[in-house]
Image (tube, rainbow, N blue to C red):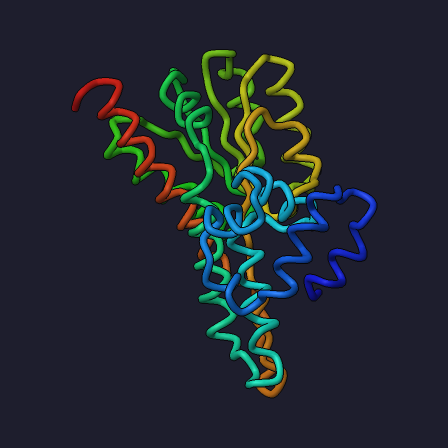
Length: 253
């Protein structure tokens, strides 16, 4: 969906300042494509937080995704952007958003937890959980990954409020997983969710919410269609890097 269409769709949630920002962007699309969030804020005489709020009111995940839309719209009429370029642009957008994101509360929750349990709802998500376990070993933090099913009952018996639960999902809607999380919440276990969609049942149950962008790759001639899930791995690597930085400040290692 084009930015103009998003403006129309979500116009009821936009303020006068938001429309002022859009007016500037619409008149300077090519220049804005290469601006940082601070540069655009200065041009519009608003704070970077105001710009970030504006992009999220359009149901975008942040300024990086906003710039991807600008880039694609600016390229319209010149040449068709290939799927490979679109996927790379989505990665670039997510990296920009992650750089701007404050992970401190999540990092502190991981640091303070006596035990961290991590669960992925699907094949790729379970691989992400195992990779997260491997990465955090370097931060001297042991993660326990599990596969669901009968393990849900066994782990529920062990969980307490000093533990931390990390759930990795796409839709955040799997019934068995949601039931497990609800039971864990009854035991006052804090939950971190990693999901794709901004509004989903898992995110609503969670104390800390992390969002990723997946890119649908479709090639009609070869009848190929799949979701690129690389963003999950980018996110967990950002988490371990932020965690190691936190340790350096906390413990002077």
